[in-house]
Length: 144
Image: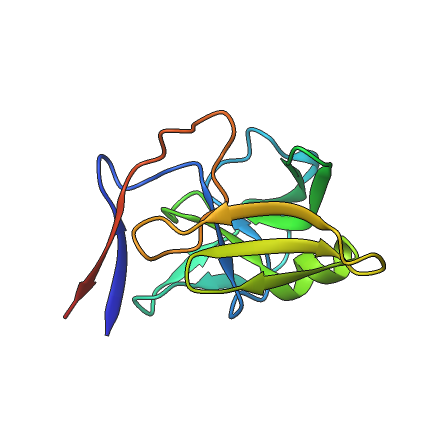
């Protein structure tokens, strides 16, 4: 089994594309728009098997040089350490595709194929760096 762990306090403000994530998930609601308290009974199942409660749902915008991308109905889960982008919801909600290779991931416009956003991997992980926190904390993958 693998564990994702961030150094220096365990949290960072970067976003991690995740093809297994069923929803966008964030540990902070600071940048949420149209935020509402979560009234449902669902929880987020995290990697270690525990269930984390959802506090709020709202929209978050990730900025790029070319445009902003909306993370619609993101779940605010204060107890998680990393922010996750649901690739399925991201591509549907932003009319784009995401391509991954060994060193980068690229977001492309579905109609034109134009590259809209590009990020290099960091320490072997695909990371959408938070523009307000360019010096995002290093991450490690520890094998158990």
